[in-house]
Image (cartoon, one colour):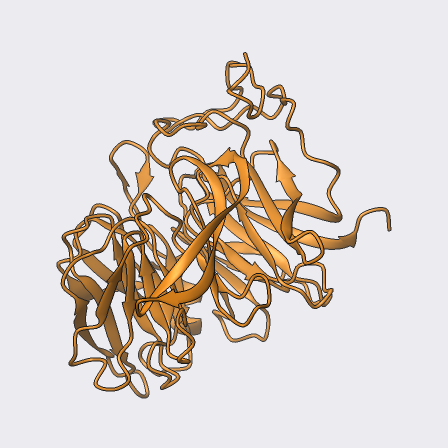
Length: 407
C-alpha cells in the first residue's frame, strides 16, 4: 500500500536469514513509485562478510603498499580482500554487534595501524593492537587495550584533529543530552610503547544523538555541532577551558557524522545533516549573524528516504566537485523507525549551482547494500577512481567505481 507519498512497497517474506539475527531485505522485494533513475556511475559489488557489524575503516594494515579494510571481527587483505581474524564481538540488545564504528591509527608508534573502537552499550573505548607479520601468520586476535571508560550511551565516535597538532582526537557522541561533550586526547607511543590518553570534557551538557565537526564560524578552528546547538572552540587553552555552547538548532536524532561545508559558495559554511531515525535529509544555510549568534535557513534535500545515519563529502565522479554520499541505515532501532521496511540504498547528492538544489543519484538501490555507522570512500584498486567500503546489518561490502554509465 502507499506509504504517504514515499516509496511504494509491499511486505514480502524475506528469503535470507541469519540465525539469531534479523532477516536481510529480500533481493526481489517490489520497488515503489520512487524507483531511482538509472545511476550516472557504474558500480561493481563485492560482499566481504554477511553479519551485523556496522563499522569499517580503510588503511594499509600489513604495510605491503596495498590498502586493506578493517570491519568488525576481521581485517581484509587487499587487493583480494582475504579475511583475517581481528577481534571477537558479541551481539547486544538482540541485534547490535558490540562495535559502533572503528578507526585506524598507529597508536604505539611501531609503524602498524591499530584499531580504535567503541560500542553503544558499553562504557568503555578500546584500541586493538596490530600484531604485525608474526601475529598475522599466527592468525590470533589482536590484543585489546582500554582507552577510557565512563562512556555509557555512546552513539559513536569521530577521529579528527581538533587542535592542529597532526595527532587526531577521539570525539565521543552521546545520545544522552545530559552527558558531557567528551574529547579524548591521544599521545602516541614510540617504538611500540603504549600510548597515553587524556579525557577532556569540553562542555558539561547540551549533547544529543548526532554530531558534526568543522569550522562553523569562519575562525579556522574546528567546532562541534550537536542537535541542540554548537560548541565553539576557544582561541587558546582549548583543553583547559570549557567551550562556549551556542544553543538554538533544536534538532533531533541527527546524523553521525553530518557535514560542515559551504554548499552554495557564499563564503559561509553550512550544515548538511539528516534524520538518523526518521525520514529526511536537509541542509542549514548559514545567514548573517544576528545579535552575535549565527542564523540558519533550512532547505530540504530529500524526504523519501529514512535513517540517514552517516554522511561523507567526496568526489566520486572526478569532476572536481564534492557530493554528499549517504544512504539508508537498516534497522537502526531494530525496525521501529519510520520507513524501516523501505528498500535500503546507498546514494549520492550532487549540488546544482544553477538550480541551487541537490540532485539524487543512486549508487545501489534495493540490492542488499545499505549503510551502517560509517562510509569510506577511497581508491581500493588503483584505477584512480574512488570506491566505497561500507558495513551494515546486511553485510560488509566494497562497491568498485567503474566510471560513467554507458561507457
